[in-house]
Structures are given as C-alpha cells and as structure tokens.
Length: 390
Image 1 (cartoon, rainbow, N blue to C red):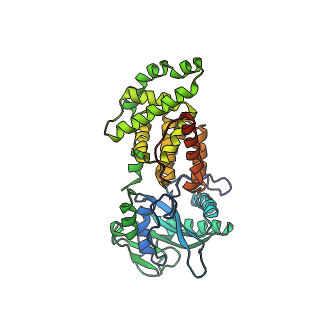
Image 2 (cartoon, rainbow, N blue to C red):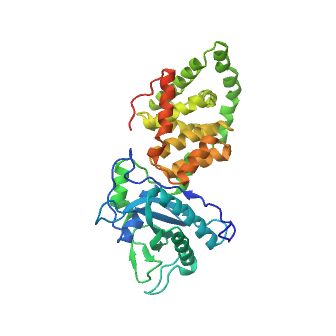
Image 3 (cartoon, helix red, strand yellow):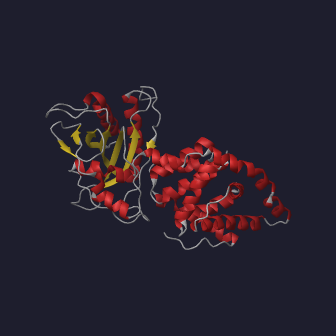
C-alpha cells in the first residue's frame, strides 16, 4: 500500500463482529462502561473472538436509542498494524472501512485501541507514550473519520491484553491504568456461557480452515469416479433433474447425520459431496441449514470439506462455512472462510457477495433471504430440512 491516501487500498479487516443484540445471537450482552477503558480493553478478546496482537481495534458506538440514554456498543473491527505502506495511507484506509460500517450501524463515534507488544508505557504522566509508534496513526485516523462526520471519542494503547498490563490514553496522556483479568470479564463470561468461543490467537481460527493437502490428494483420487457416476446426466435423460437434486440433497443430509453420530466422512464420501456441491441449486438449498437445528453439525461438515477438498470444489464448501458463521454472528471465521473461497476461486459470485456484505457491515439478519431461498428450493424438491431456529 503506497503512503498516499488517494491510492490507499481497503485494508484487511477482521471483520465486523456481530453485536450482542443481533437476532439469533443469544440475547443482549452485559453493559460495558465506556468511561472504564480497562474493562473495555479486557473485553476485546470476547468481542472479536480471539486475543488481538499488533492490531488496531475500532469499537463503534451507536446513537442513543432513547432521550437521556448514552450510546451503545456496536461492532468491533480489528485491523493488522503490520500492513505494507505508510501510516498515513493505513490510517486513511482503516478510516474509510470504519466510516462505511458506521453508516450501516448508525454510529457516529468510535473508540480505538492499539495493541502492540513493541510499545512501552509512558514512564510518568504527560509523557506521550506510544506517540512515536502509533500516535501519528491515531491522529490521522481521527482526521479522516472527521471527514465522514464520525468522531474518534477516545483512543488507548496497551502492549498485550493480559491482567495487570498497563494501558494509557493516546489522546490524554494523564489517563492511564491497569487491565483487569480478561478471563474474568463479565463480557467474556457472557459470551462463553452462550457458547461463543474465544481463541488465544487468530491463527487458531485460520488453522480451522487450513488446507490439508494430503487429505485433498486422497479426495482427488476419488473425484473422477464420483463425477463419472454422472447421476445428473442420467437424470436429464430421464427428464428428472429435480429427482437428481432431491437425492443429492438427501445425500448431504445423510453425511450431516453421520457426522452428528461421530462418523467422519471418508475420502470417497467427500469426493461425492464435492460433486454434489457443484450443482448451484443444491448448494443454495444447503445455505438454509445455517438457520436450522442441524446448523452446528452442518458447519462442522463444511469445515471438514474446506480442509479436504481440492481445487475449486473447496470454494463451494468455504462459502457454506462462511454463510453459516456469518448468520450466527461469527464475523472473523466468516471472513477467514471467504478468504479461502476467494483464494481458490477469485471470481466466485457468492463469495464476492458475502465478502462485500461483511466488509460493509451488513447485519446477519439482512442475509436471511439467502436461507429463505434455500428453504424454498428444498421445499420445491420435497426435502424437509428440519425445524428452523430463527
């Protein structure tokens, strides 16, 4: 990225996490006191689902919903600090991404936290700690946000998010403190209690969708046979394409049921699923599993396929995983899965659509129509996908 705000490209964002009041997401979360930076910083791993390192985290504040009330915490977005280009270009690109999501979230204020183990806390009051490292970035970030009528209300810095670590303000050098234990944060407790995982590092998330080349080779060895049994061609000859799609959809549901009972699909079974997912109607019908009672197990199957399918077939499984993660509010996993899909197939239309939605801050419930479309396909084919949860 060039050190030129006009040429700055959108940075990779770890992806707006869904807010606690997003439908289907376990109800409202505990209230954070915005005037307590230590509590807010300690809650960041819960808000973005992993412990951020060498990152800028922007927390959006939505407008008050009632007279006399204060702003409410909106999505949190994480950006890598170690991106190519100068700080001015990085600040402009991050501000542009944040401002776009602010517009979608009706947010006019932002809180920022710099996490960087290369920084040292100021030794005494009125020493501008971190100014040499990231203070200039924060200043430029604030100016670019102001251009979009968004206010940077406060900004803090901390080397790492751990108990008793010192944090300090990047805007008011007298304002410093120490972090409480992040693992005992009420926000952390609420998220864990409701089944939302918190990973120690982002790499734990990326490992979930890492390509297993050995497994992919095993699956590839069965693909020709799986494709050679071209059930679709036979169905077309019988003038029964819907019959093929119905049986294909049922085949996937069998694999979901098997996995729920502890049976991991074999390489041949995964090759058969790869061929099934090449049919666009079948894949679109499977999007509806993300809102049904089998959502958790289906997502596990998509993870297995993303790890094991070769070539462009991997992109179809990655899109299903991304959608499943997206609608349950797991923005980071959705973004990582979409990255895998677009790396495999840069022109994949559904991956591009979901990636655009995620980057623009579209809420999960706004993508419900994709699941409804899938339910309609399944209904047309005469396949019952089970009870719907939302």
